Amino acid sequence: MDRTSFQLAAAKILSREHENHGIGTLGEKTLHAVIKNYIEPDEDYHEVPLEGYVADIYRDGHVFEVQTANFNTMRDKLRTFLPLYKVTIVYPVPATKWLRWIDVETGEVSEKRKSPKRGTPQAVFRELYRIKPFLKDPNLSLRILLIDVEETRLLDGWSYDKKKGSHRNDRVPSELVEDLEISCPEDYRMLVPPELERFDSKQYAKATKLTVNRARTALNVLYDLGVVERVDKVGNAYIYEVVEYGLS
Image 1 (cartoon, rainbow, N blue to C red):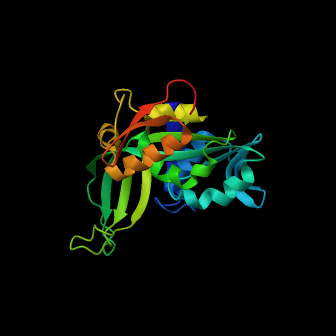
Image 2 (tube, rainbow, N blue to C red):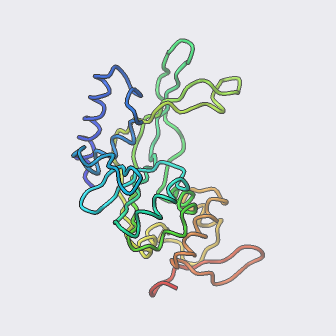
């Protein structure tokens, strides 16, 4: 992890946006642009046509795809790229998030407020489930970036305060908190909290701050990767342990 490089990438993009008279004037969102410049500062290697697609970054036989959501849209691209290139999916998770609201009628922007929710690396499992058949491919790796962000949202929702159902305008990163690299199935063990020895989905959810449903999805992926094994069942709940010696 290189926080200095991340800050330089953020300063570069924000300066460019300032010159263009405001956030959101780029062809891509701020967070996505900053991450691309953090991973590869030389923009000659950005947006490279490759095998009928456009790679976010391509250099020396290595593709980087910055994906904030909807991993299912990557399936065809992965199916094409993985037999030919190393591919790293870069997934940002808001660690601490500050919110500002934009009044769509007046343009007024509220003071920022800190969201009570804090992101964890395990948030990635919701997306990984969508590309589960590709996760064991030796050419596929993952980088999870925990980033403090300031998010602006439009007051255009359906609730009385116009917040529920609102649309996100942009996310501006302020600090890189953690940069986790997962290059093989065994590396996913870092996403099982060390205090968990024999556990069910509810205990995993509590330790990782996921909902129980998302914890079940995470454990489904970890089980498929051979990182955890099912050692018992209590009622309808599986009991898991981390696989200690090799993959199952």
